[in-house]
Image (cartoon, rainbow, N blue to C red; front, side, top):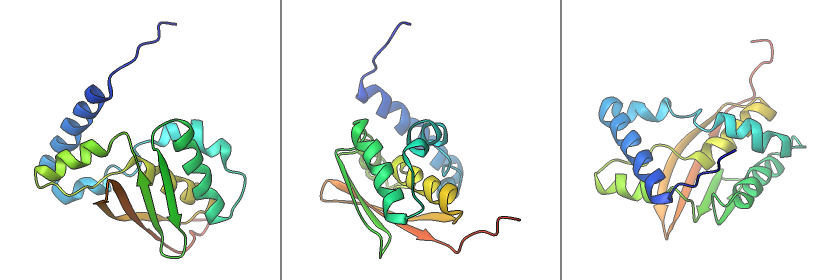
Length: 152
């Protein structure tokens, strides 16, 4: 198989253009359309590493995958207030560039992966309520809802 490598600058410029075009089309509504971005990666890389139904352990498993894969330099979380701090994300430049165009950050792949894990394993709906760029990192706020009835 022929392996190719792409520059991060190229990948992020394409992501920026896609996110900006989607924002221009949908505005704030775009955030509700991108919650499943990363689903295949989640199923292939993250789900096999989750061996517990403990919320903290689930978040840590996703964090470990992201760190091992070099997607983030580090991640920390506070389960009590549902905050996740993501440091050194490969795609943070996209968010900075969008902010420069007065587009609030509205999607985050690490947050999507954590939300997918919680929804899949704990059957609890999750919403990414806030993304803030702070001190060179992203601060994410997740809202967890009551577990879904399995029969629904």
